[in-house]
Length: 126
Image (cartoon, rainbow, N blue to C red; front, side, top):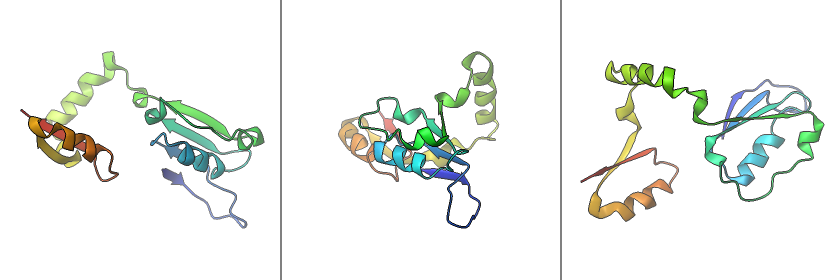
């Protein structure tokens, strides 16, 4: 979970904006409860598409707002070419996202890597 902005108020009233990208129900609830009563905005980023578990709705009745974001609002028809150009020009460093490399025979190992928080991207060579 990433908290983007925090002001220090007496009594710790919460954050204005909270971005949650794991989809884990406990962390989704933590994001909701950690946002400011009456003003907090929680953004669930695409990872929680297959939500299993319960969300606490009582904190939402206190004026918090939930927004969803799938694919970061990228429009493939207009934005994808710009993203590819930035990758080619090295403005976006894709190599830094590579954390593991496995051969095709080690595909089961790749699935295990994906379960760890330190894994960002696995390349499978065949």
